[in-house]
Length: 91
Image (cartoon, rainbow, N blue to C red; front, side, top):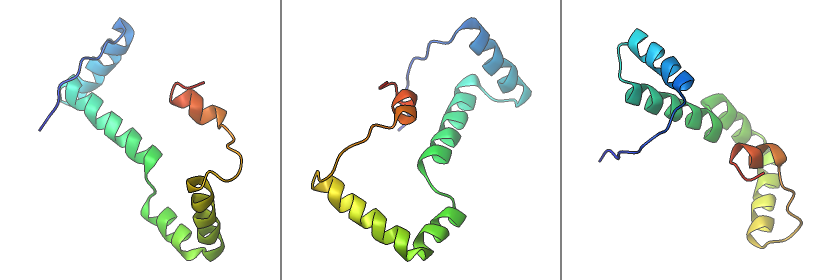
């Protein structure tokens, strides 16, 4: 079921979204949803090539499993990724 949200845009941002939406014959809402979904997919998921590369690399898979186990056990030291923290507004 679709959910409604309110988004506050600057006049400049609104004009940019409006111009693109009109050019693509779609609503601003649909444009924002499409762009957000694409960005999340690009950032959070691997493509087929990446997945095959990861699955075929036994050393990498072994290290990933060890890292996951260590993290689950809270073993080791957490190093905060400044770029990721900034991206998610945690800097």
